[in-house]
Image (cartoon, rainbow, N blue to C red):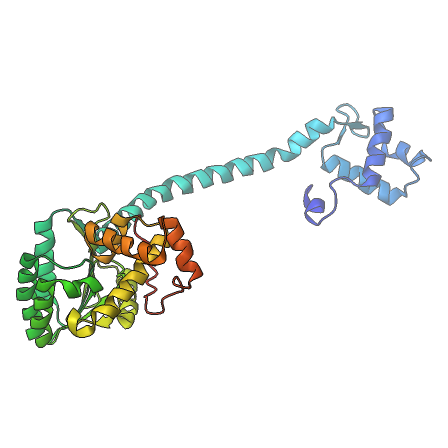
Amino acid sequence: MPLQRAACGSSYVSDTEVAVYSCILRFQQVTRKFLCTLSELEIPGEELDAAVDRLKELGLLRSHSKDPALLVPVDPDLAAAALTAPIQESLQERRRQLDQISVEFGRLRAHFLESSRRHTAGSIEVIGHLDEVRAALNRASNECREEVLSSQPGGGRAPEVLEEAISRDTALLARGVRMRTLYNHTARFNAPSQAYVAVMSGLGAEYRTVHDPFGRLIVFDRDLAFIPDRDGSLGAVIVREPSVVSYLCSVFENAWAHARPFSDAAVDGLESVAKELDGTILRLLAAGYKDEAIGRRLGMSLRTTRKHVADIMDTLGAVSRFQAGVLAARAGLLDHDESAPDTGVGEAAR
């Protein structure tokens, strides 16, 4: 085959063949016998015959139409076009096959994506209305058999919400379901929350508080989780995807390990709780959080938050929030709090 030599790693036309072709060009038409008489070639007869055969094979030489013994040179462009025509045709056929595969598999891709969307839709469900969220929570509660994990940030929950929770949680505990809930430290100062915790703790529920919880979360039997809708509405997102639910459970467990058992503020000691709150406020101030964001994170009203900030600045002798952060850093008050959970969850919007 003409291309066999190149396929083996050498060139298509050797130096000997180039020399023979150039010589024939000078005479325009020659015989093999005449070529053998040319001293300028200095090519042995067998090698010369092989070169001529190769040039004819490549289409660079042809026999004269009237005298087959005469060798006539052919334009290299024409020879190359004739030689590469089958290759071009093969490439075009390959391209057609590629296009066909792309089109036909593209049709399958549409079915695959639709199936993925259906699967994802089953793993993630967005509920936009509070009534629907409550109904979904009640269904999950009724079906729960082993464990409920809950994180409820905020200083305290509304009495009507707690009243509804008591009915639901009592039924869970009666079935032997383990219940663990995280609150802000400030929930210790909320009378309805204190009463609720006192009642449910007597039935076996467990409660702890942290100064800066990671966010609202409820997990049933470690296979169904409720998290807030991102737009800040009263809606919720139900998560069933096992890896995501497992991750949320690990976030909860880490926070739980660093939290304090819930108790009446007076019994636990106002001083220790207040000191921890002030330390958290200092770190948030140094991080650039505004009073509104600090209050949301710690479950305090804006008025209470501002009072804490003012007291801290007064204690430090600072005239600005920035100066308070600098002075606190110099005093070593911003050292990492080992009791603070590393949740792995991004910070809330400031």
